[in-house]
Length: 254
Image (cartoon, rainbow, N blue to C red; front, side, top):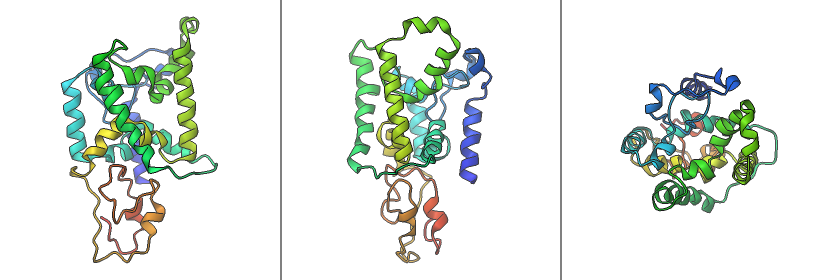
């Protein structure tokens, strides 16, 4: 419950201009010079801050420094506590449906997307500096694209194949999030890939005291990301949600 409250608070603090959804206006003030810690589209009408992925594609050394600093401090706890799109994914997964296990090899896709669409293609091609945002990002489609189209009739006549592609990706991600816990976070998010690489070295860590562990398996059974916290506590996939700690009968996980 405490984590959920933090998630909602972080979402509201990074998106304080919710009234803009009705007018289609964008906040363009000084706060847009700063990056939010989680994935949150710059063009979202409610957003007060920039998205770090968009800033990274533009070659911002400031954004790179901020992301690395946050990653060193918190690792993927950002995903578990501070990312608005992470919250959306978790709420989607609460929809009653068949739940399936995610093959581990699919978690490597996000590293490919990070390298190709965030770091390489914006530099070596003419696709534009926001390649991931423009061609893939479902968060941008949901938070910015659809609200802007709903409030700006002049955009209706220019919708084409690119918009259809992005809506298709969004629909696929929504379905994925319903049946797989944090599907986008685990498979496609380049920001999660960066934080994941820093998870092992971050100041915020989970540890398991071997002398207290009774190998009951409760932590593994309750991990929504299908990890074994007694072995994978520094995994790049762990978002530090704390479920394992909460169910541990001997308080071995801290």
